[in-house]
Image (cartoon, rainbow, N blue to C red; front, side, top):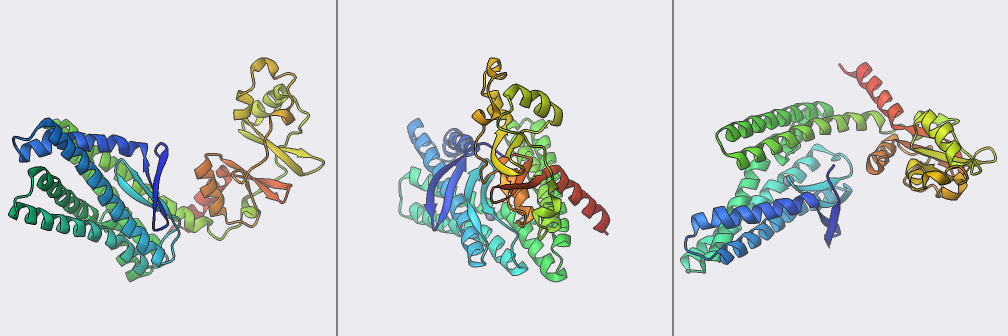
Amino acid sequence: MFGKRIKLFKLFGFEVGIDWSWIILAILIAWSLSVGFFPFRYKNLSTQTYWAMGIVGAFGLFFSIVFHEMCHSLVARKYGMAMKGITLFIFGGVAEMGDEPPSPKAEFMMAVVGPMSSLAIGLVSYGIYFLGRQNGWAEPVNGVVQYLSYINGLLAVFNLVPAFPLDGGRVLRSILWGLKKNLRWATNISSKIGSGFGILLILLGAYQFLKGNFMGGMWWFLIGMFLRGAAKSSYRQLLLRKALEGEPVKRFMKPDPVTVTSSLSVAQLVEDYIYKYHYKMFPIVEDPDRLVGCVTTKQVRDIPREEWSYKKVGEIATQCSVDNTIGPQVDAMKALSMMSKTGSSRLLVTDGNRLLGIIALKDLLQFFALKVELEEQ
Ligand SMILES: [Zn+2]
């Protein structure tokens, strides 16, 4: 969704990383703390001290969010869910979940532990702040600890709003799911509330903006947009999963795909295949259906135009990889997640090095649309 992910470290077997957007956020936070929050609450400190406090505060927030997401991940793992890792991005953290939670109870426990962990850090920080005040600790230390208690309290409250996919929305979904035993219905209701809350934040942001609070207004606006998008797409994702899970790739595969041979020239490939079929990738096949490689438009682009007429496809092709091939018995949902990961809309269906056919995103989505149309209500 966003830019590149930077891996930082591993904790309890989970890879913790940040998205580039988080660095921007961290700088914004350090900046607003050093020129706004700290000078406002603690007078008469030097500029350097405010900056040091701001930077430590931003790091403190970083570790608070990692702790929050780590608690989600540990509970999820306890319930047997595959967790890929934790990524911090501009709107906070995401514990990357492989599948839907196995039961309402698992989801409830997993979701509720997030706000609880933030609340715990908030209370502990508040206790330390209280001690610091009593014992006359240095102002900068008190300031940072106070900020951490405040921001974690805010995180706990915000995350408890029952707006899916926020933690509170997941708690709500798990309760509805447990009551009616219908995950789709529960997701529909809670994501509608999530989407509604998103609109509320957008309006709040617009109002703040009109009042002249540009920074704060823009911030709420963006969070609202993000939440609304996330609520809608998580419901769609669930429907998609329900529709495709358990269906083998074979079912959607088109046999007899368009193939090319290694002896074809690049010019012919462009003229007779790429411009004709508009695909970005072609399988290269020798004697009936033995797959020998793949050629993509990206590889063609790397060849100077004047070489197109004599360069052969076989010279620029690469081996087909696990990123663009899939077995016929594999779950179609897996095919879809491979497509979304790699951005390619077609995968080769292979059995060993035999090419059986092609599975295309278009066909998966068409099937999904039909299924929803026929089975809804
Ligand atoms: Zn959370």
